[in-house]
Image (cartoon, rainbow, N blue to C red):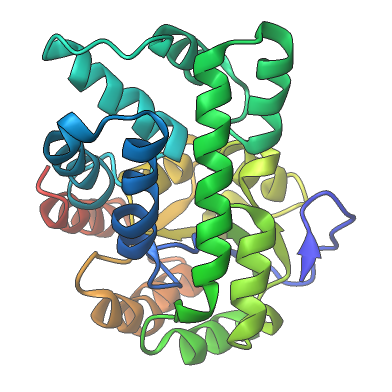
Length: 280
């Protein structure tokens, strides 16, 4: 499996772009509920508001149409909700400014912004991000793929090139996919380090794929939006119904893509199912 910044050679006529967290790997709840939210409360000393923050974080990242956004965007949204309750987080405007203007939301981008501004709030955000990465790395051996993923990926890769397109760290993705023997079923990784999912799909399209022969698979509306921005098909892995979703992808959606029958009506049906699963 190649790094997204190395040369990539198109091998097949079709391309499948694939999110990882919450789609291939059963990682979303444990990363957010066990690591990211508790660490945010700890690093920013927000214990007095822990219940509110925990509820807001879970709603944003697990249960609604904002599921799948960057961890940094999640911090911005939670701090906005605290502000609406009259609770000011010192320097939160620095975090909001970076999140709103950065071309990529990554560890490296945050470091560059911190070096430029010296913002104490961004320093805390960096401390939080680093703590999350350390704890997630320690938990990696406990993460597992959803049932049926390996077999489905094997069949998908037999007929299409496969690109991992994720907002997670590239090294974490590579480690997780290698541990469970999934790396052999993918050709290239795009992590948070190379920008948005929409840009990653566009980079792959530039390798010579026809948009009508490309599919994005993910568990969040952001994945659907990245697909729509590039005019490619989108197939959801529904939260809580992952095994069924993988079967539908393999048995129904993939044949439609291969045979040119992936219609706008079918796309609308899939999007409606995801919106329903995300209560929005």
